[in-house]
Image (tube, rainbow, N blue to C red; front, side, top):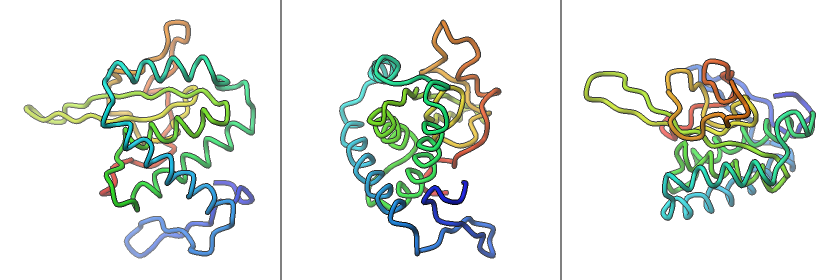
Length: 183
């Protein structure tokens, strides 16, 4: 994170875990409040969500928001802020706010700023009989929430037909944090 964005500086404790200063800027606390509200809204919405709804959310975001590259540096700063704050607040709320809740919260927040995003859900089969799924939020090919997605194979929220290569987990970076609140 760049200094001057209202994001607190981080340090690493003895166990190698990233920690952030308690004396954060007012902009950070406003963003934390917004993240809390969006996480609550997403958690409530999740109880009524169907897989087909994810595609509808993605379509609505594409229609209403600016695509990656159209908003320039301002959109990238919003994505960085949202990608920094949402996972950190999600670990501190008293309800379950795992990867899909985080992706839904960040999507709504970014769309309110006119920024198009796409929720993707992928699967991994680490061992016979095991099955893992994971959700992440993309703005173009940049990961906003969801962390390192390389081992997941996208099943929902693939790249649109007119956007080859977007959403390819091999092409996406590793920015962000793993969304499992237990991490």
